[in-house]
Length: 169
Image (spheres, rainbow, N blue to C red):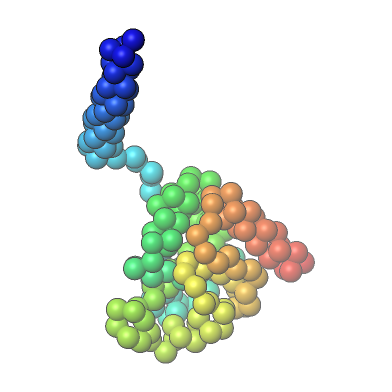
């Protein structure tokens, strides 16, 4: 009997070790596959540069959608990668909004241009990313702060479009 018990005690750790090696090998293989075959998320929103758009008059037919963004901000990058590449969101933005990206350089350069500071103050931007929908008259219609899901962004855009239509009547 002791021989059988010893066999069970030594076979269990051995089988766990073999199982771990198999799982680790599969994970490494999957990582290599994902690296060689990246997910194609499609194209994202064609954002206009904020500095250029400040010099242009607002398009009277479209709302402005400001995306306050920072290069160092990982939630900003996730929003761009995971949400702004969604076909419905991209099409909604491109057909209803003048899409403007405001890239904050406070961390990199120590200071933002005065016009950017005023824009952030006007629309109460305190975190990145922040989406601000603005009527042609310059009044903010709504804002969405932080990394959001595709559904949240789509609802925000739809609500903004409806609110602007009601206001125009």
